[in-house]
Image (tube, rainbow, N blue to C red; front, side, top):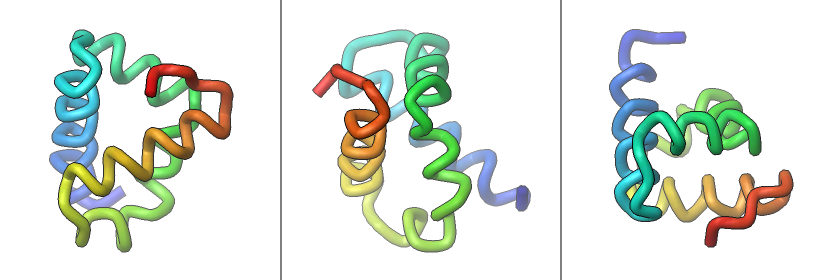
Length: 71
């Protein structure tokens, strides 16, 4: 993991938490459980070039495909 990925992941977790009115810890657990974090790490090279809102939209789709039900 590069030194740039950690701030990116932190921003994504915080934005996700804000969008769904949850704590950062709850957002982290949700994203980890439903493979959102794995997606962000695997596709960092593409996702970090998009707006944060587009990235979160992508993560929501991945989480829904893996059993998540927030959106």
